[in-house]
Length: 449
Ligand code: PMP
Image (tube, rainbow, N blue to C red; front, side, top):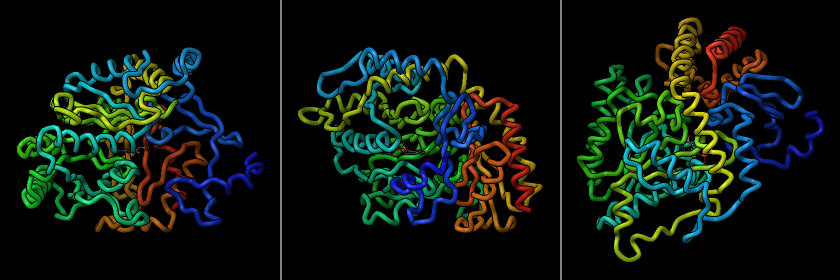
C-alpha cells in the first residue's frame, strides 16, 4: 500500500523534520484509528502511546463526537464571529469554558484554531491589557528555558529552546528566559525541590528588578513543560511564581495547551498546583484532535480592564476567520461531555501514576535510561550517555528513534524527541494498556543492549 505513495510523499514537507532528500526512513503512514489504537497503511495495529500529538484525549473514532460534528455540519458548518455575528455553538462553548473554570474567575473567551494561535492571542491581549490599564510601558515577557509555546513569532520568541529559533532570524525583542525548575538538570546541580524552587524564584526576582517591573507585561509558562521533555516543577514552585507575579503586578499566563482538560490528572495543570492564572491558553484536548480549535481565556482582572477601557482601548482588533468555528465548537462540546462523564482527569491521575511506577525500574535496569518522570499521562524517559553526569545521549545519533522503532514492532507507538522518549496516550488508557507500554519499552531497551 505504502508503495503507492512513493512519488506523492516527496511533495509534502513534514513539520519539525529535516527536509533533506532521503530523510524519509522513519515514515509511518497512519490509515485508521479506533479507541486507543491506530493502524498503519499496511494494516499494523498499535497502541497509541502518543495520543496523536498529546491531544487525542478521549480516544479515536468516538461515535458521540462524530455525531455532534455531523449534526453541526447539517445545521451550520461555518460562519464567522466578527463584529456582532455569532451562532449558538460559540455561545454554548464560551459558557461551558467559563463555568468549567469559574473557580479561576475566568470570564471571557477568544477562540482560535490551535495552540500557537492561543499563545499569540494571550501575548497580544496581555499587552492590550496594560495599555488599557494605563501602563503601556509593560510590554516585555518572561518565560522559562525548555518551554514550548508554539511556532508563531511571539510564541517562538518566548519559547525556551534554541532549536526553534536558529532558522528564523531576529525574533520578538523584550523576551527573557529563566532557568526551569528542573530537578534532574539545573545550573545549580541542586537536587532538593525546596532549594531549587528558592533558586529559581530568586533568579526570577533578580531579573524582574534588573529589567524594572514597570516594563514587564507577563510571565508565560506551561504548568508541566511538555515538548521540553516533560519537566515537572517541584510542588510549590507555581504558588511562589504566582506570589512574585502578584508582588510585581505581572500577569501570569498558563500555557495549558497540553496540560488543559486532564492530562496532568487535574482539569487544569495550574489548578493541580493550586494556582489561578490571569490568562489560560487552551487547545489540543479541547477538541481532542477531531477538529482544530484553540481558545484563550481571560480572568476578571484582564476582562474588566479591557472592556472598561475608554475609546479604542476596548476594541479587540484581533481574531481569525475561524474564531469560534461552529463545527469545531460542536466537537469540543461533545469532547468535554466525555471528559466529564468519564472523569478522564481522574483516570489520567490513576493510570498515569501506575504507568510511572511500572516504568521506574527501567532506569535501574538500563544504563541508557537516566530518569523516568511525569505527571498524570504525560511522561518521559530521559536517555543518557552517562548516568552519573546525566549527560544526554547525542540526539543526532538516532538512539531514541531506534528504541521507538523497536517498541513499534511490539505494537506500541511512542515518540522519540531528541534525547527523550515521550508518552502522552489518550486519557482513556486502561491499566492493562499501561502495562503494554511498559512491556514494549522493556523489550525495545533490551534489544538495544
Ligand atoms: N503550547 C504548548 C505548551 C504546546 O505543547 C503546543 C504544541 N505542542 C503549542 C503551544 C502549540 O500548539 P499548536 O501546535 O496547536 O499550534
